Amino acid sequence: QVQIVESGGGLVQPGESLRLSCVASGSMFAIYNMGWYRQAPGKERELVAQISNGGTTYYGDPAKDRFTISLDYGRNTVYLQMSNLKPEDTATYLCNADIETTDYPSGHYFWGQGTQVTVSE
Image 1 (cartoon, rainbow, N blue to C red):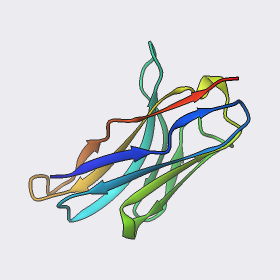
Image 2: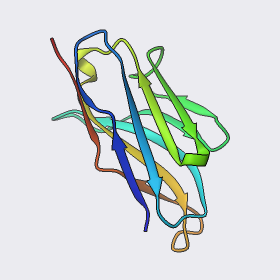
Image 3: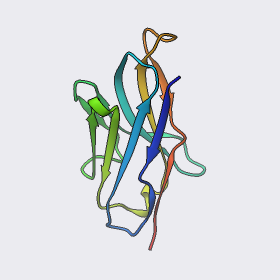
């Protein structure tokens, strides 16, 4: 069984930085890609950033120029370095991973429970 666990959220002031981490664990054959989404109250979930196992990255509009995604494939861990945070970045940040398992030989997206990021004075 695969587990996705996020960490690193918290309360910060505008302009500060945070680094989120997400670890995939359990029985798996390969991780194809990992990514971060976010969801604020009353809003739809939106893509923040994705990274493939080959290191190809894609950033959604919220992340461009301020966030950096990176992957430690050996540790099954993806990071999201966020800088110059703004109040509008306040949201629950969720990690997902496309993972090949016995039950999902072509891959399957597994989700974590999320970590809260609050940006406020």
